[in-house]
Amino acid sequence: MAGLTPKEYSSGGKQQLGGISKRGDGYFRYLLVHGARALTAWVNRNGAVEENSWLQGLLERKHYNVAVVAMAAKTARIMWSMLSHNTEYQPRQLAWHKVSQSDEVLKKS
View 1 (cartoon, rainbow, N blue to C red):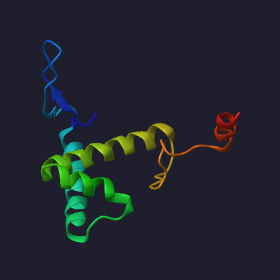
View 2: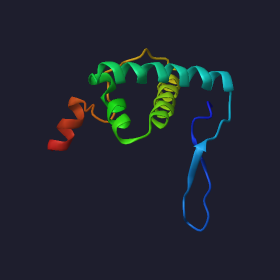
View 3: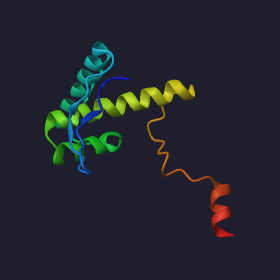
View 4: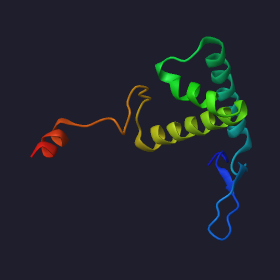
């Protein structure tokens, strides 16, 4: 969709990932990356808060530009999910962390 996934060069069971694929709309990718760059610069200046602690951790482990592209890719996935499910942005909802009461009752049985 946006060309922010890594290119893959695999052979003989050995997986090697390269730079971003750059497939898709270049202007859309440009906007995503520059938005992510602005957020990343803000996090560097002001420190992490709960909503961007993932990005702060990534900045501590990876090169700055790698973190920027990862944030752009994450933004693209969030946008795709909102559009495909026709929902509004819900910043604190963690899909892997949500457990409904009916699920808890089933686990106790």
